[in-house]
Image 1 (cartoon, one colour):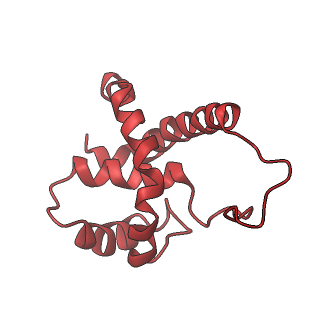
Image 2: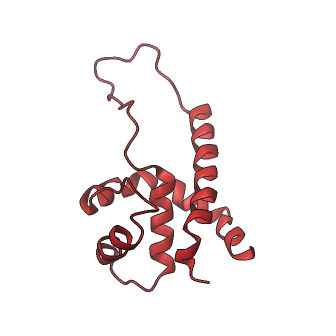
Image 3: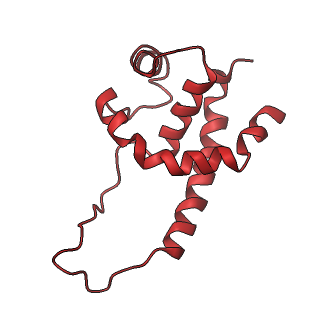
Length: 120
């Protein structure tokens, strides 16, 4: 069975991981009750595409035979997986947001959660 046919399974595992990751991150992060004028402002609005969706797409890319991420995203994800990812970002915006999911993706892979997909 192709890995692309397991999009929902990969997404569910990634989403569960992202929820746990964010809980742990919020527990350990410092909160500023009185932020100064010099402190950076943080957006409160959620993005169009979740971190779990982005992680799923990145895992699919590394599990397929595409050599170029741009072609994978534009010609496979945007055409073949539009139903699975209805809120796709433009290629440029996706690439701009990739550093945001780098650490969660690294931990996701490091903790061996990829092995769970191949057992089932």
